[in-house]
Length: 218
Image 1 (cartoon, rainbow, N blue to C red):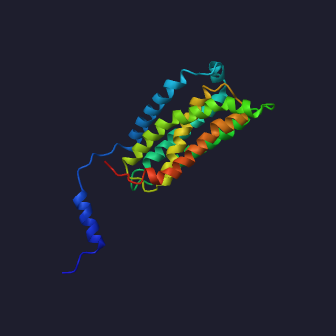
Image 2 (cartoon, one colour):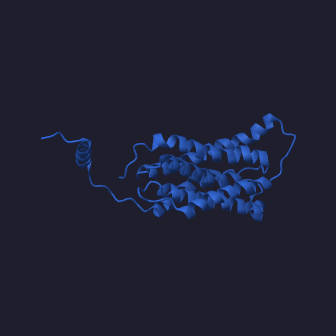
Image 3 (cartoon, rainbow, N blue to C red):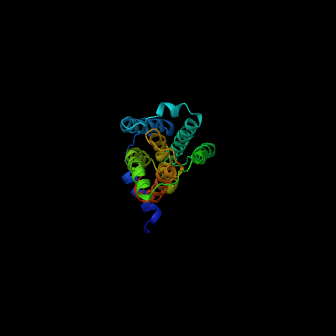
């Protein structure tokens, strides 16, 4: 009798390791749960450091539109992230376009802000340092929670899932930063608000093959 090939050994190992699993929630339900956790995590620290002129800024349609676009981008990219953890679930072309499109429009809309000259490097960094720390600290928990949700599934395109998770997380953080930051200057917003979003998405994509390598449905 010939020795079984690698296919037979693989099947035998999978059968031996098989065990009952709990059905995963739908991507939409997992998205709502993630958004609820993320918003709760962001509201707690943000309400302590709200900008002095927030009420006035919220009466400005341009300011509200920018934050609205960021939130739309976060929701749709977050949806695509959790969908990426479902094998056989193809990428939603419409939601992907809406998500990245809203995020891109928000960043472009930010370009309307004025550039203030005369800042020294030290002053520029001193003003921006709190925003960097907030971006990192406020985004850490929502990002980790979203990665845990992805690991409970089985993301095959891990880098794609990672970049979506990072972009969705820090797109959600950006409006929280804006309602707390006292500065509406283009260089400040570009370096200390937009750059953490881009860096977060890139870092998440780079780490995803490692962080999601052992992902499996539970």
